Length: 262
Image 1 (tube, rainbow, N blue to C red):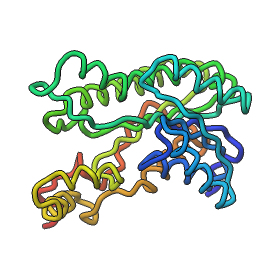
Image 2 (image 1 turned 120 degrees about the horizontal axis):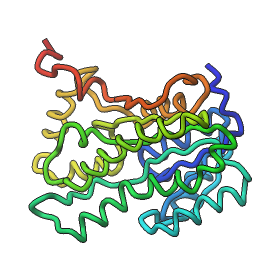
Image 3 (image 1 turned 30 degrees about the vertical axis):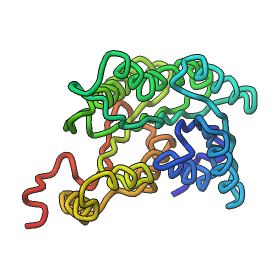
């Protein structure tokens, strides 16, 4: 299916690694021009070069998104280069373990800036361009807002905010023809996940246990599977879909895992 994304300029925050990198490469494969926005220019450039080597187009902007002024500068850099923005994928963030018992006010607020505030700011600054293009927005969110995880109050709160902003923006932006949806991530294999698993006792055993609890095929979701859904939601092929929180998780959140292997 042609997603009709050719030459669409789409911001992807955190686009240099993990899920973001997967989204960038799928969008480029569809003929779009993904703009990688992340803190390290070298990491951004590496993915940009890989896209170009594969025959695609990409651009990159180095920005520390936890700093509000950097969000405005990043959007302006995209407009200076292309004069338009056709879509935004808010993806950057980190499960940083700021818990109720282990955190404090300062770390909690820092985590919200790393994980939610820039979602608002990037779209706020990009909105005039999105109105002009009748673009689309996809927020990448996490199951932690719905299931909890333990010792990650700030990240869970940020994801609850991401989900709420998705629904709120879908209502507010109806009059401009801008669609807003979220892709909810559960267990997805990324370099960051690999790093986390290795901090546990018996990591291989724990990984086997986690996979066994994912109903569909007892495996983790891939970054490409999340990227495919994201690309679809950005495209006019999903032209009547807005305000949705779509779980791409092999049934992890909603299916009865006790019966999955029966």
